[in-house]
Length: 81
Image (tube, rainbow, N blue to C red; front, side, top):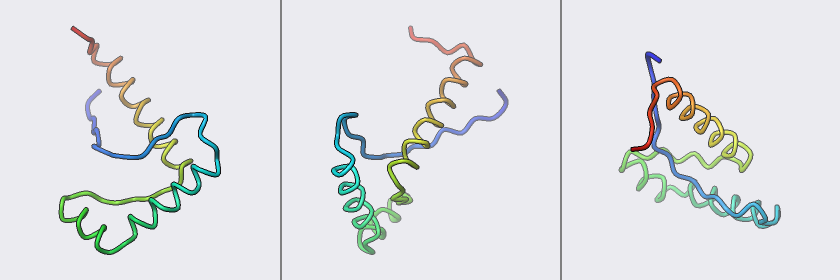
């Protein structure tokens, strides 16, 4: 593996049994908060890019990051000691 980039990211996750209605409501509230100018300004000042995507997009992103990490671990032979 010649190149590898690992991003630092943050997100909100809930238990698998959480109702879709609650997930949608949380998503709406979080995205609205992230779109507030004062929140955006504060995050950007810290070098944080607020995204505020859908639960499905975030799930796909998390899965892609997981697969990427597995590939790096397998190709480099990294292990626990």
